[in-house]
Image (cartoon, rainbow, N blue to C red):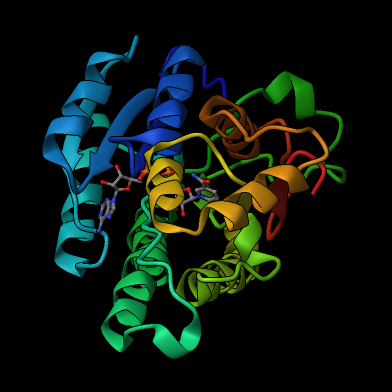
Length: 269
Ligand SMILES: NC(=O)c1ccc[n+]([C@@H]2O[C@H](COP(=O)([O-])OP(=O)(O)OC[C@H]3O[C@@H](n4cnc5c(N)ncnc54)[C@H](O)[C@@H]3O)[C@@H](O)[C@H]2O)c1
């Protein structure tokens, strides 16, 4: 999203690791100033050290409204606005079939993944509504007012769902529930704020080579993981950078009419 001389601002939760870290790095390569947020203070500082553009590290617990509100306030105090947000913070939970699953574990996974995304949207959108719409490339859209309804964009948000938000994932009912919920929240928020110039989309990655996947491999039965790996027509898991690229595209003004959408990044599954 080119905005003249001003650097656009991207906020990334879960920015201390995996897909969130790769996304913050990619945003910075594209010229965005970055607000990198994570519950893990040390890892988020490490991510900040990888960025080529100005940024701040913010410790946040996405399950707590006060913490999420403080994250948004810190972003606005430092950079004045939030053009894009990637809500990537998430946990896999402890794998178990439903009859063996613990109720507290269900609440924990839903709390971070579903409520966390909902809270981030709540405060990010409240901020974006106060921002003036930015026409990032007026010359490009000048003669196409009917084609592009988002000529002034207040903000663009991408939520991290999963391939498990589109189909079953044995041993992961709470995780699946949370990722399906994210798609419902995404589509609803997109419909509620479409006319305000705020776009909300989701990505649905399949297995991606991050620390989450390493933990899953330790916890899940080996034969089950082998079957999962073998399902991908491409024959490998995704690199976090491949997910990051799609997130940055969805956030950018390259797709001004795309909202309420989910993009599968799943190697053909
Ligand atoms: N790795 C995969 O195979 C895969 C596939 C599909 C979707 N996803 C989703 O992508 C997102 C990123 O996953 P990843 O694979 O990079 O995992 P990861 O574990 O490498 O990164 C997740 C980050 O979220 C942070 N986090 C956890 N709880 C938090 C909280 N309460 N508040 C703030 N931050 C918190 C962690 O500290 C960590 O840095 C998650 O939402 C995950 O569900 C991952």
